[in-house]
Image (cartoon, rainbow, N blue to C red; front, top):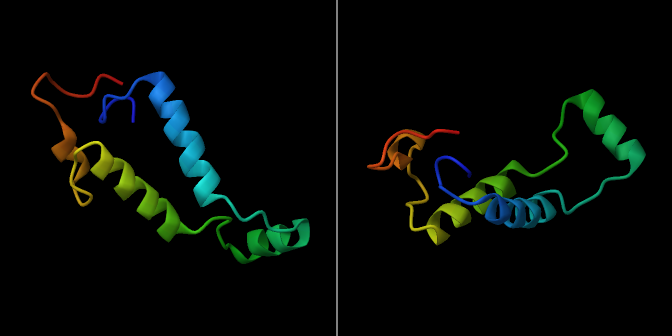
Length: 80
């Protein structure tokens, strides 16, 4: 977010908090979390993370299906 999307640190913090609250909203019990860890299941819904990232890109005026290398700007490569 800092480099490719040219967001400020304050913007990144706000967006990261919002996204993490939405993606990790469900807090499984300790037993459920341990069982998921043993079975190799993630603690979050990957489709929700993907949805949040696509929403972030579109709100910044970028196509949701844009490739990482397409986010380069005329003023040069990402310096972060």
